[in-house]
Length: 334
Image (cartoon, rainbow, N blue to C red; front, side, top):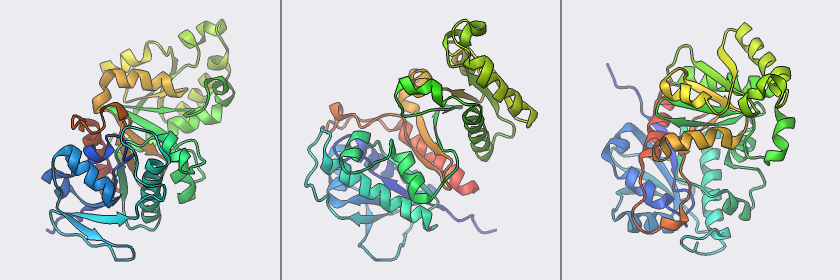
């Protein structure tokens, strides 16, 4: 019996002014990763050189120039060499247009390849959203940027994953003052459906999903807000009628205690920090962000560009490794 074909993944070094290049080189230097998938590194030569210098390692790459067909060799990384940013060199440890240009052009190239079916997944080292916007990105984050390029009109959402626990959220990178108006029955249902589907794709037959309330103590029977009574609970009732194992609304300050205990496979939070603070406390260095709702898996570590330690050679890659492993697993099952 012949071996199943390897997944083909695009790999990006993230913001070149941060720890991304160092993390990427450390990850791709691992033989097990080079054997797990056919990896296409998309980066300017300068970003790769920065990563090799900071990581103290040298990658054996097969360089591809613009217009050359994709090709892979066993045990080697294929390097699609990108043009250097027009804004010049990115200053280390600083948010800059040059860094944003480098990251954004790599992200665009990888997304185009995914759209055309040339790669089955994308893994990227930490980006910096402000640098991306300085370089011209108009969307609120890279997920919405890729969503537009891929023509996805349905609901998308960041999943945050620490060990076996997953989260999705009803709202994401929006001001806190706007959150309550965005909590609708349809939005809650979308956030539950999308993580239920993703967990099934990852191998969990019937995910157990806890839905958080919006207000302190989940509204305390309506005395601290009525969103739980008027919006969230009716959405959960409809989801349960549709056959999903959803429960709640749970009090936001205790739901993650039960989730950490193993009572749930996922928690759906109402806004960004409601879930992110809990997840990062439970395992910041192991955390993964998966972009849900796209036609291919797109994953990164939960950690950021970490300008404060850029160039010091001390960046850890546990979260990025978990992101790579998850992306390989999902891409292979697709």
